[in-house]
Amino acid sequence: MGQKINPLGFRLGTTQSHRSFWFAQTKNYSVGLQEDEKIRNCIKNYVQKNRRISSGFEGIARIGIQKRIDLIQVIIHIGFPNLLIEGQTRGIEELQMNVQKELHSVNRRLNIAITRIEKPYGQPNILAEYIALQLKNRVSFRKSMKKAIELTEQTDIKGIQVQIAGRIDGKEIARVEWIREGRVPLQTIRAKIDYCSYTIRTIYGVLGIKIWIFVNEFGYL
Image (cartoon, rainbow, N blue to C red; front, side, top):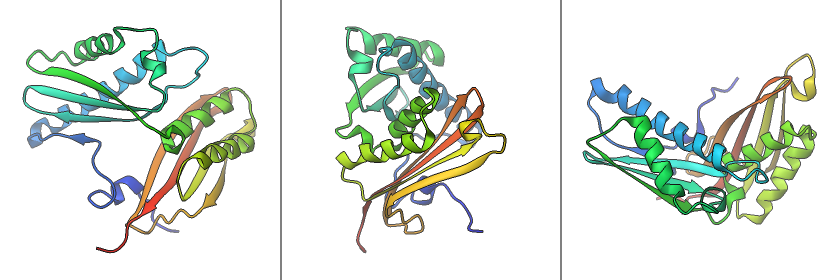
């Protein structure tokens, strides 16, 4: 059996960069890590509560955090910004207040910026949310996986692999089903691969969705 490793951590410093940028002493590191988790959870909960019902999913690709002594800069990379902003003139201000309350931070200012992604269906998190929504609506798992791969045809990716594990379709024995289109070279470090792991709760139990997307391959230096 091959040894499994997170494709993002495996490529840090080559084709991938950190999602959070800050420095802390060893004794304060765990506090900073929990702070990051609070910020991300607070933003996701706010988007879930305030999204339009017809949209069905959040559309957040990733959340970047940069910390300084007196400032916390949060950048939300979102595929469908209308879900967060439309109909709310003070949407971002309200979100900033909610996150500030959650952090209980008086000495540091909080600044939240929203960046729109041009091709949202090239992001694994957004595709995983789409598949999760289809599975909750009792759509066949194979049909939802194929539809997700069809959506990526609008983008410039070179390959995609989708995997669903758990009690699929309510069967008593859990199993793993996967589908691949194009190349997904997981062992090539210079290959830029986006990855996400997503958990979905269904009436049959918990299902796990994993998506690998082969974006591009960098040549030798």
